[in-house]
Length: 107
Length: 120
Image 1 (cartoon, rainbow over the protein chains, first blue to last red):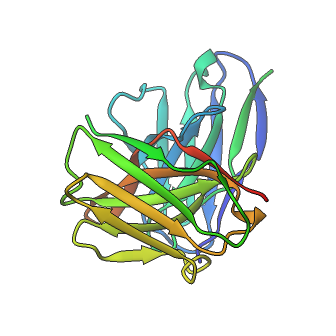
Image 2 (image 1 turned 90 degrees about the vertical axis):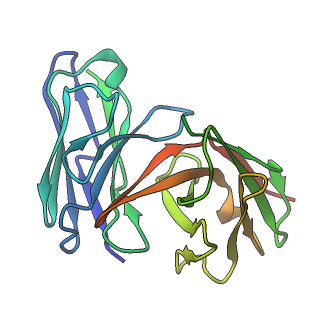
Image 3 (image 1 turned 180 degrees about the vertical axis):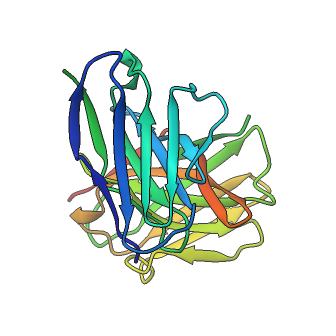
């Protein structure tokens, strides 16, 4: 199985901050990397697919980059509604696997 | 747009079979892949498996011996069965459409999820 490791596991930030979350795969997954946002009690929501494509309806302050084994999710200016847990997920091979999550909290 | 809704018992006894249904509205289950994903309370996400509209399946090896996914095209429903459950199977179970574009694939949309507790 391909292991997905996110860093950090949690972070504290203020509204307006630029936030970066990293995701590393245990082997190359080309660009088959997706990012999800999950709020408490809710289902995950797709933000970014294929490493850098913004899902329809997702604000442009979210962006994704990377290929191979190293990927990044960036929130350019953190908004109050962005406090949540973020997961990366590889779709390169089955079983598809998720990172352990990064919780973004209010500073 | 496509919406998914999970349903089924919220409590299952150890060693019994967990059975859930996902009803798709706003679109057909044909020509799509459909997945089940679960999340134990306070923990991360685990992919269970997927089914294609032609009935072909792909399961997580960690669950393969106990899981089966099927679909009913007449009812626009996808079903999950997990046999011989233990407390470790307590989780929120989500169904999601698996979108495939070339070499890439992703899960969207997701159902709201249903909590299944394994306890006597």
